[in-house]
Image (cartoon, rainbow, N blue to C red; front, side, top):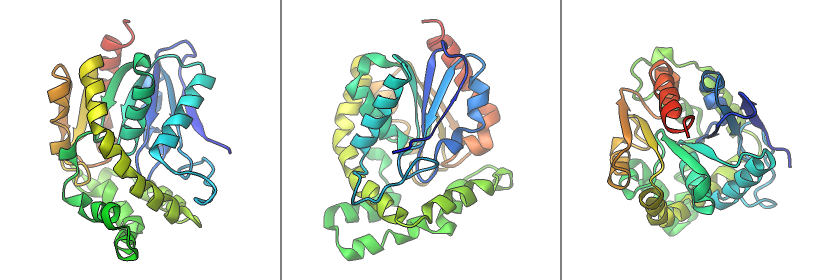
Length: 276
């Protein structure tokens, strides 16, 4: 299988591992990567079924968050990245947290952007998905079909933004073209069904936070309907020293708040990672 990843920055710099969400890819970090690459070795890969990575048929390949975490682990070991800060966003949050459970000693810091690890984060937007987990019937399967429509893909990028006119339509056009590939809907349905296994691991994720206390910064679009602000606050129960920022933005906050978020991230890494 061919897997795609972006890499930038000095080869001996502290590693920042960027883990993307649904329905996008490492494309979501295209503007953040050059900002961090002056000092940090930035790595962002596309999961199978996303972006430029291969998308084998779901009957021939296991699309699961555990498998993704294993594949990320293999990649960073091949790249000789022995320690890394994790950027957790949407699907990337459980992928990164699973990686942290495998190798807690390798996690230098956490950057959390609209990435959930708490039951409080599974609000109204998750009712239909939870019904799919419970029943798994053709009816609950069909109820999720709208999640892959062009209208919903655009909604994810524009809803709740301070100024939606600032969001490039290239985002949803790019993502939708990949969602519409033959067989991709089945891939995504497998992942949505597997997401329930992340929920059962939330207590272990939270224990990792409490036990290891990695330096953490939270940057959250408060108007996100997928993972609302209620999903951000619980991190402070387990990580009381978290640096915490809410923005008047939505799910893909980097698209309209990069100018504010990137300096905060860089400064955080300078203080918490580069000096170690």
